[in-house]
Length: 70
Image (cartoon, rainbow, N blue to C red; front, side):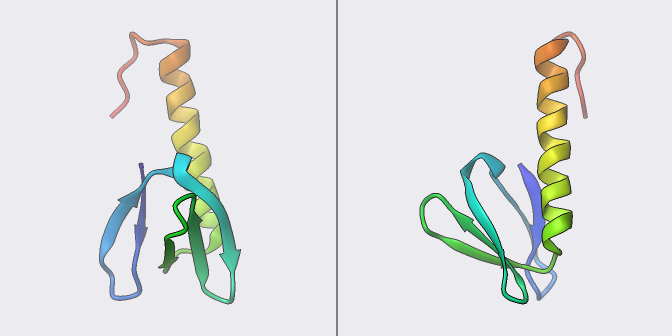
C-alpha cells in the first residue's frame, strides 16, 4: 500500500496494484480499476515514486524472503 493525502490533510493508503492510471488535471487524480477516482495532494511524480519504492520493497522480499522490511 502507498500513502496519499486528501487536500484537507487526511492521509490514507491505496493499493497500487489497483491503479489504472494517474491523470494531471491540474490536480493529481488516481483512477482505480474499479472506476473510483481519488484526487490527491501529491504531485503525480511523487505518487509514481512511491509506487516504484513499494514494488522495489516487494521485489527485495521475493528475492530474499529471510529479509523482513519495516
